[in-house]
Length: 282
Image 1 (cartoon, rainbow, N blue to C red):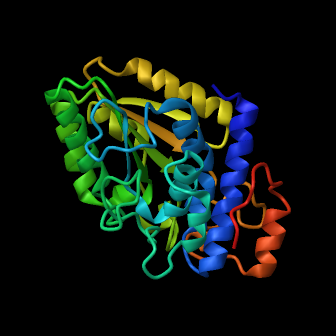
Image 2: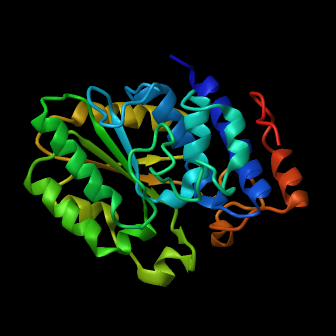
């Protein structure tokens, strides 16, 4: 198992990948991707029981559903560095005929992607269905789902939340990226979500919180969440992050939700993120 320092180093390289991908494509979503790099690194390098050989049905391995599919850069980086596909392929992000579309898609048959996501509000419903499928197949592995906080403004989420609690879908661990930012501004200025912990509690879920930009806490909380499965309740982790964490001039600024850094900004950002593994070639 990698140490916390090794995981932090991987997350730093993942952040480099994100910045270089969106810069090279001149489009993409760096903000949420940078903020969630620690979570993805911990998930794929420490927590998930997964196989880069990849079987689409996900039998006998954990399944991850990325509901907020616009943060595909962090997803692609971690998949490539987990050996699902060559790192060099990151160079094709958002290019014509690439398997690395702006939102994860299945038509291109990219290993690691089981469903097209990015139409916000739908991923949790898919995750609940996947978890029930595992139950009916006597498959004891888990289903994980990541959502954005602004995404919870979509009503379909709350139907899935009610359904999962009613049916005691206790092989599901959902996480909300609670960075208080969305494309149009601060979460509270668009549609306030109020007390998220109280809401999920009221709907019958086991609720946890964590600092999503502290690798040690992320690893420990995800392990704790696994121990809480199988006890009659679905689990949700309210994960507090900073948008664009790791790059000081981008942090906590909603304007970096979907804007690529230019070449000068890229160099300033990379100077704060020392290379820990080989960069992919451009």
